[in-house]
Amino acid sequence: MKLTNFDIDLFLRDYWQKKPLLIRNPWDRWTNPLEPDELAGLACEEGVESRLVVRQGEQLALEAGPLPEERFGQLDGDSCTLLVQAVDHYVADVAALIEPFRFVPDWRIDDVMVSWAANGGGVGPHFDQYDVFLVQGLGRRRWRIGPLCDSTTPLQDNDDLRLIADFVATDEWVLEPGDILYVPPRFAHDGVAVSDDCMTYSIGFRAPSLAELVEGWCEHQADASPDELRFADPDLARQANAGEIAPPALDRLYAMVSQALADRPAFDRWFGCHATQPKYPDIDWRPEDMVDEGEVLALMAAGTPLVRNPASRFAFTQAGDGAVVLFVDGEAFECSGDLAEFAPILCAATTVQAPATSAEVAALVATLVNRGSLAFEEAE
Image 1 (tube, rainbow, N blue to C red):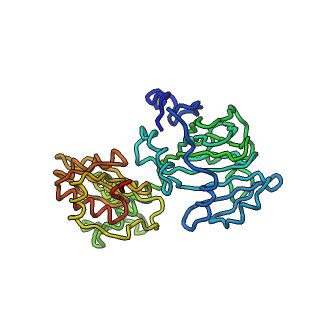
Image 2 (cartoon, rainbow, N blue to C red; image 1 turned 90 degrees about the vertical axis):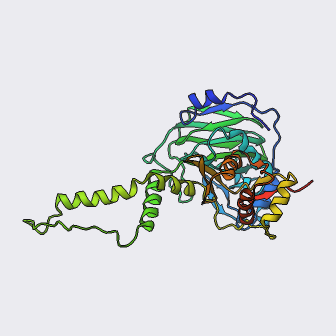
Image 3 (tube, one colour; image 1 turned 45 degrees about the horizontal axis):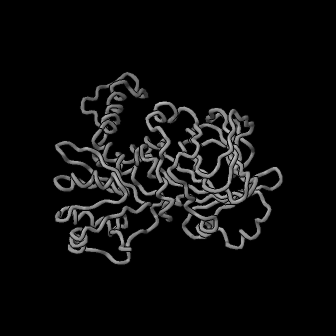
């Protein structure tokens, strides 16, 4: 599926991270990529992050997955919502929904959450810290949009759900299959199903917080610092009051920390690894049968395409002198020569053709295949 009636440049200029936008069915054709029963099946599986939100009187209650199969038979007539995270990791047709939105850099992409709701179901008025495209898959959903929120916005007394206490809508739309609602960070929104079998695909984008960056970068640099690199004052002079932390000492201490954190090449490398960490790093995607470089060269020579694991994250940075650094699932790979040409190609598309005769490329591909980040496309 492709976006055919959508001006990307106008959207980025006027709406991205600025204000919500309703986009009426912009697809060349819209086909719902997942059935409700399939989503329910995923919610029952161990290792798949899922939640069930059920209305109990005037309150919403949250149940964490995995959910027992019989739970779904108990929901008839209830205003409930099933939420399953990272469905793109498991369903190729859902992963394909990301492709039309890759005008946003890949490192910003989080996942595709899929929700199913019975008539009247929803998760209540809330706000998120990330951009999201809400694609209506099946049924109809009424969305109400409110003002910008922040950490001071009053919330309801609910331990499980961060719901806005005094939600006032400024816009309201009913979305039909294929319609898209873009919601920037911190805008209040509330979606309620107005039909049964209402399915919504939430394509979410990450934005690292300052706290996350500072904590991660400082921890990385601290771990990389040798123990002997310590404060030193060989020019120490007697001071009038031994209880004072004197300005020369503070200057030296501050310089030590500042210099350690001001290492730009090290930061670039750390952030590439940090940004490509898998969403669920504990899941083992390695294949049952490992490959060697000879097998890889043979498959490359046969023209067999390579397919990226939808759960893997790929990115690269320019390293100067024609070299690049490839980042895959939190690991960094120095690339020059054939590899420097291949790495950006590998990051640009989810299915690629590898050079047929490069031993360097074959070695990298074998490593990534054996880690579960890549796979050779199977013949139909």
